[in-house]
Image 1: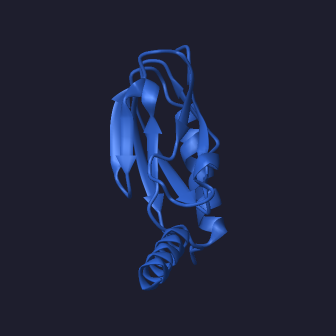
Image 2: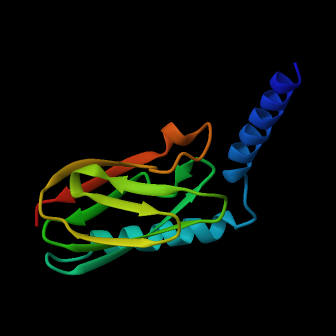
Amino acid sequence: MKIRTGILFLMLILIAALASACGSSSTSDTANTANATSTTSAADSSATGKTVEIKLGAKDFEYDQKEIHVKKGNHVKITLTSDDGGHGFTIPDYNVDIQGNKSAEFDAKNAGTFEYHCSVMCGTGHTQMKGKLIVDEA
């Protein structure tokens, strides 16, 4: 009976730790909105072959940009920031995977719509963390 109680206690601690990994943050929503607006504008106005830098925030089981637009031929640098726990970012079709507050770079060689999602198990809302990379023809 003591073993069952001990195992149950450890499971409760593990669940609490996972839930707190994606807790709320004190970062202002105004800063995130300004960041999302400026990076989207930079991506939309870029010309083919140029480097496009995108800052993507992850918070409360969602990304601050549901869609990222770039042009075919752009070199893309995505920087992931998360203040409320461990999150990731992956675009499987472009072999991009970011773990935590880091960056990744790739060339947008193929036009189309590609799904991105969180690649770090971050809690109960993990499966809702997704969006679309839209690569438009140049």
